[in-house]
Every structure is written in C-alpha cells, then in structure tokens.
Length: 305
Image (cartoon, rainbow, N blue to C red; front, side, top):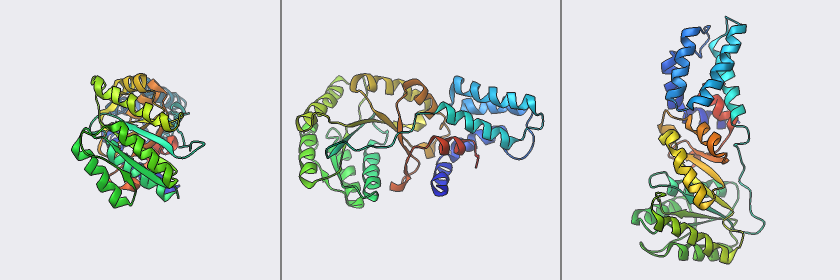
C-alpha cells in the first residue's frame, strides 16, 4: 500500500508543486492565516480543481480555522484531502471480467491521448495478475500506431492481431476476437484510431467495431473506456461528453498526469460525467499505469501522508 501511495505522490508531484509553490509551504508545520487561505484558493484554481470543489475545500478549512486560529498547515492539508475523497466517492471501479471469455475492452480517445501505450500497459498489468491477454491493433488509420503497438507487444511479450495501414478496423477486431477465443485469452484489448468527435466517418467506424464484436459476443464490448490526456485539464470534459453520448462510455483512463500541474481536472471530469475512473497514467513505464484510488489521489495532491 505504501509503495502504491508513493507512486501516486511521485506521479502528482507537479500538481503538488504547483499548489505548494503558490502557498509557499503552508502545508508544513506552521499555523495558517487569512492570507495563506487566499493563496491556497488561487493555487487550487491553477491546479484545475474548478469552482465547486475549490469552494468546498476552502469552506471546510475556513470553518476549522474559525474554530482554531492555531490550525496548522498539515491539518489544513488533511481537511482538503478529506473533502476530495468525499467528492470522489463512487469514482473508483475495479475491472470486472465478463461471464464468458474474452472480456473485451475498447480504448477510445483523440489523437495523442495515450491510447496505444495505455492499451499495452493495461495488457502488461493484467498479465502480471496472471491473466492472458490479446491486443488488437485497430488503429489502422495511422501507420505509426500499428507499429507502436506491435513494438510494445514484443517488448511486453503480449500476443497481437494487426493488419496493414488502411485495413478495415472492424475486420481486425473480428479476427482478434476469434484469435483471443481460440487461445482461451481472458482479455481482448482493442486499440482504436484517435478521432475527433467532429469526424463522423471515424465515429461511424467505432459503431461498426461494436457491431462486428457483437457478432461474436452480443454482450461485447464489456468495457468502453475513454483515454483522456490529464494535461488538458477541464477542457477534456466536453470531449468526454460527446464520446459518451455517441458511443456509451463505461469508464475513463486518465493519462500523462506526471507531466502536468493540472491534476485537479480528474475531479471536474468525475463531477460532470459520473463515469468511473479505472486507471491513471503516472509515467512512461508499464508499471506506471495504476488503478485509481481516490484516497491515494486526495492525499497525494495535498502532500498529505
């Protein structure tokens, strides 16, 4: 548990730094004051926590400060973490297998969100848990995507079904399901082409992939996850709304959080969409894809232990 918390803390170091830099270390041992509360408010906005969440955190810290003028920074941090954990209640979700194998997970998102690397990392994570996994390279729109997933598959020793650039992505998904079933794989992870919600042909392709998968298994896909670039902050909310409306998302994976000071956006996405957050991308290595923990996240962003 401690090791996992450290990974969260390291992963959110830029968000923590953005807050502590502005607050000049008020989350240390000294008593807070009115000025430091104002600075904390600015810091929370900078980290993209949004109006509603920032207001809730400040309201509770101010109430505690009113009761105790000697309130220490560490106590304020613990209050902030507690509010975040409460706001995120229900946001965690464990990956559950389908009644029959393979459990199909379709990864969706815009270009550059980290779908392909996340697909491979998820495969590796499941493999470490003793599960058998098949990857499907259904981003046939972009030549580099197929090669990228193949490279990850070789590196992580994961089987993959792929085709040439421009191939029918739905046909690749169909073949991948058949291969996964024949091999008795527990999971099939489908990497799809990055797409803007304004590109109707690519949005139609997603629907076609779903129809083809359902020819093999009427309940597939069992999980449809939007991979969101965490550095986009609250700008990703509108993007997620459109994908959810058109494809029916079942969850989120938030990536690139180690490289941004806007780690508060996770809260806004949850408040707006109420889509469970399954995993966070906290670094470049396969083990840096971690199951989302509201408690670890809340403690990490406030530098609390």
